[in-house]
Length: 309
Ligand code: MG7
Ligand code: MG
Image 1 (cartoon, helix red, strand yellow):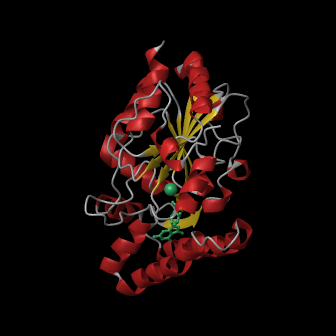
Image 2 (cartoon, helix red, strand yellow):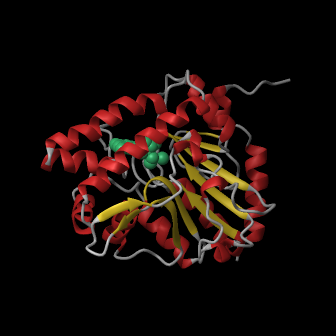
Image 3 (tube, rainbow, N blue to C red):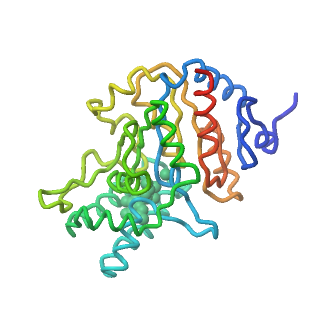
């Protein structure tokens, strides 16, 4: 029997999709093709996109390979500029906890208390400083958050075809909102958020964060409030396109009760030498895109679904 090698798998792609020249892995093309067929039969009316934001809809690195910003990172950069002492506190937290988040030797259970501490401390700093909405909007304008190529068109095309987009982020939802408003002019009607939201007092100063806290390792049904107003909109949308870049993103669909397929697209931003990590991504994501700064594949999938009806 012919054993599929890593090389073979990285070349394989289902006939329905021409992925272009970007490097990608599909470990089980038959399953991907079967899921896609079901999604095409269901059409746009049965589809919902559930996507992570940081390093999924946004770019991981610029053309020179420099790391770009996450939504939380907006505070690191801007506060460092304005109030170096406070800025250093954000940076120290990142330096301490980021290696724990990605440590291959720790289990998820071992990491969770550290993540709660990181998010909790960082959010307290934001609330204690009482940043105004206006200041945070300015921070976003000056931030190093960059859309992946084609992200604006992707979001607009979902809206045009009435496909809901649920942005499920352990980052800061308001930052995503301001970013979308600044880039798209307004937040499209189809776009909804499950995220950490900064709450403002009557003077529009940050005074608290929404509950429950969402960190990297609790992006699942436990933090989805079923009474969210958009839930009626995604009811009956049995086919899910899930976009993520981390291991914590693969259960974002479990809050949605249904029996249709989830096509999982994973953006791998790690080292190419880390074959264990890459292999792990291939096991949990249907399609793994390696160092892909575009949304071409996600757009292709949506185009295929829309092309039939
Ligand atoms: N992330 C989480 N927190 C912070 C923070 O305070 N500063 C920075 N720079 N990054 C943070 O979108 C989720 C990602 O945001 C990062 C509290 C984590 O690495 C997480 O994966
Ligand atoms: Mg991410």
